[in-house]
Length: 308
Image (cartoon, rainbow, N blue to C red; front, side, top):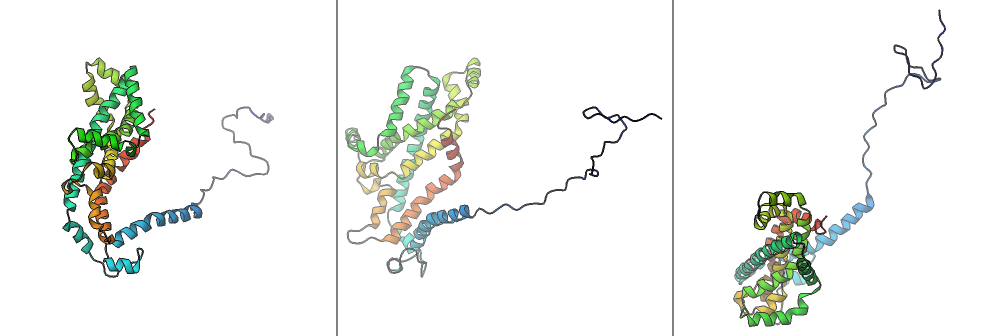
């Protein structure tokens, strides 16, 4: 019978032999599954969320609740109290005025501004991205310069231009300057979105014989839908909330928009605050619904402003 020599550490074990036991320890036991641990509550974050909810929710509560009370109830009990006898008379007062006319004018101006801005921003952004000339670079710089010019600083020249074009007191007088001031941001957004398109896709379509117009329509526009949606929502918000251009460039009641129509509830000696707030709520609802359906495209488009 031969002696069994101890196996050196590091050498492979012979087949059929049992693994050596560790001194003082038995065979290995399977690891027990760890128990499910509940996440720890983040109390500071929850407290901050409650504060933020109060900051956002209280104005909305005050706005909506004020529209459901009478003028005397509003003046006697204050803004944050619950309506004693809820009523819809304030909304009836709103529809008894020319609110629907103002709403229609606002929708026309908003749709025209959004369409004009989308068409111009897509073409300008495509030209800036695909043209490597110095002229296109200068044009892009001119559009970026428009970001630093507020509308209030050039309202007098705009008024003179609109008057010379015989467009004063018309909806077109509101559409053109509103679209012009929405173009710089829109071109910046679409230029960043179009730069994210792979260069090989442009080259493959060019090798197939596609011209610039076909590349724009069949390649750039489908791949830039998020940026186009962002531009459309941004231009719509600018047109819907615009106050300065309608105030200066229109005069007749038939061409008023919602931001000017709110003055119908402001008298010389009194203000019907509940009816005014009811008009504000009704004017917010359409653009809020548009934002709910386009918020994802808006966020994704703004994230691509910087390009690659």
